[in-house]
View 1 (tube, rainbow, N blue to C red):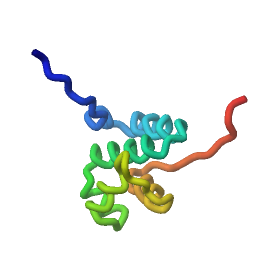
View 2: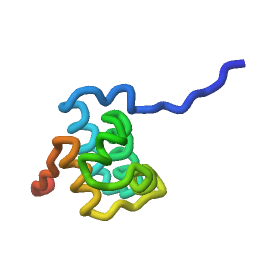
View 3: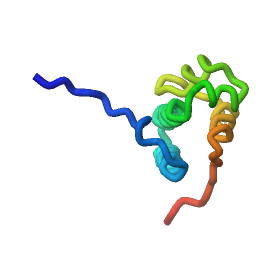
View 4: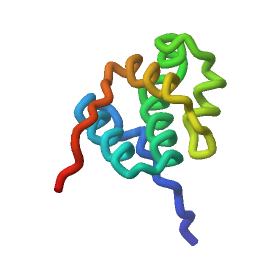
Length: 95
């Protein structure tokens, strides 16, 4: 019998362009849980300790808020994006 394993995107988030596309797609869904989870996946791929240091937030706080059950404040999300050398861009919706 084979055991199903849960897909983990972290292993694929090794390039700034891939990370940017991954996060952009998450934000475009409008799903807060999915977006928080995507931010958490990228933070884990980059190293949660390094992200914590870059944000000035505790690692435990980041693990909690950057999960499907977490609801990071906008300020937290912006700090995480900044520490990942990413920026949030807003544009009009396509017609």
